[in-house]
Image 1 (cartoon, rainbow, N blue to C red):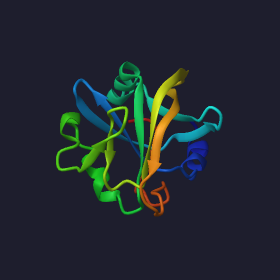
Image 2 (cartoon, helix red, strand yellow):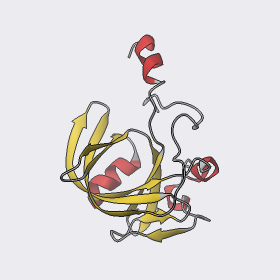
Image 3 (tube, rainbow, N blue to C red):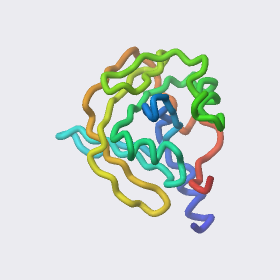
Length: 157
């Protein structure tokens, strides 16, 4: 990708979400920003994940995932989800389970449970289209966005 294009894309604003997955009898979570609503009826959400991510394969296998809407002050929480051992990402994190069995972070503003409706090849990423099957706004607050998140995701890692 040309640097001039990437410099523009770096300034796009997205939400910062925690996507959680029940996999292999354990739980995983990944930080995601390439997320968007794409339909009201039925309620559909898109999630783009790089193909080499463990979460990518876990979502394909499980066929479901949960979005946790994070508050602006959640930057400290996100550090736990950058550790290399996915089996330890929930160590010390308070959570409940959604109706589909995925973790919902206690401090989240809300969550959406999704089942995979479609999987679309999108270059070096896969676009998962998830049908919203449930969720709730747990509390009021401003959501975390890329405007508060340090660094940029350029898709090359």
